[in-house]
Length: 347
Image (tube, rainbow, N blue to C red):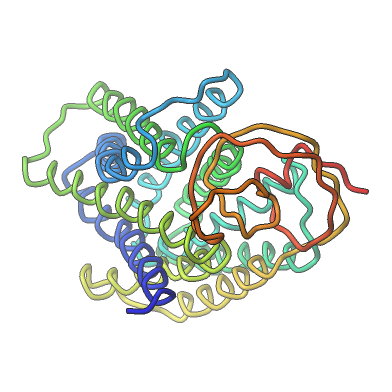
């Protein structure tokens, strides 16, 4: 397998594992309450990503209050509220419909970025957001067994994960795998405790182990594979490959759970695909000035922003350490990130 094929395969496997979580969770809801299942899934995620976190720098927490607050917000929104909303919606709707609705997460991330995090969103992005909402509505209209209530629950979960994505992208001082580990551990323990307080834990040992295994594979291992692919391919190419996750979910819902595919699913899938294409093509370019700053995050030396040197380290190799940025003025197409969301001025 050549150097490019391996990370592409990792991104596709990551998408397949994540897509499998929805039909697997649908089956597990027969034995576990939503809070209990959400807790086990996220504890499994912490177990699955722990090896990568340990290899990447240990199990550190952010050193400063601002980044700790960002991590706490990501835990609350993306680790507690979002998963419970998803599972409540999954109890009401088929796994195929929910898998397609989960495509809204990327849209929610972009919309929250435009409305709350000073990220520009162009015409194509807004059209993509409208297409995604239309795709969700197709499966929530009158006569559709999924129902509007389930759709609203899943879209609300996607908004929570969109906020999680925005907050996590701002965290520096720890690696992405470390933030994922702490999110899984804290959110999983809290949600499982709430679930056991709300109602007795009556699941069998096989169901408990299955839930943890789904968390390990579909959240922990999937995230580890995605981080690896994104570091090798870049975030945009990895996201394109990962955007196929809902299709894996739909396929498993049909083959494993015996759900039926309706015309509405096809229409919804086409609208969501159009939305993702439009959003992934979204770019903007302008001359901007980066102020001097010091932070730590995973980075490469071929991105135009990291000009310090590491003798013997290839330019395209991703690594993480504390580093300083000198003031820099330039113009190029870019995504909002640690360097383009704060600490710079439009000239």
